Length: 190
Image (cartoon, rainbow, N blue to C red; front, side):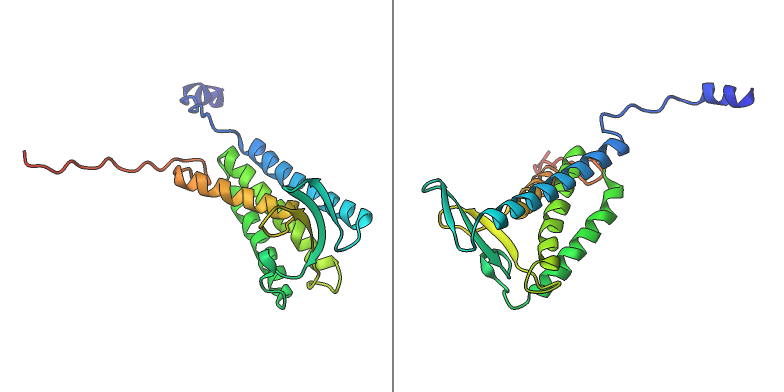
């Protein structure tokens, strides 16, 4: 009986416009799985329907499918240190998983989900594609004019980083709180 009285006397919990933790984790996991699965399925499609080096016009001259295997990073940087990219992607993936418990924003859930899905998509290539474990070459196939050839995982990572930059510039923290700049003091003689 005293527990019922204590519950009645307790002030109501403040309502919040922020989504619940369970929903945020579901959004995070959903976007991560979507980015990863979409990346891997497109890579399977490319490797089973195209020959390496083949170029197919999609929306010429703007978009082509151009199947290559990339041992380096963007613009083929670091082709001789593929194993380093494997370690970096594994580290990024682990760091994201440690940050997820702080989620308080649907936009951050989207960004971190895309980032994890993209990192795991390319990490899967590095670990399990030829020529050897942790030294595999990433399948790239999206070609735009005067730009690097890339894949869905790369697109997910770039989208995630763009969202993170916007959130940071808007002062929205991982936990969903907003950082507002203090008002500027007027300088003048009064």
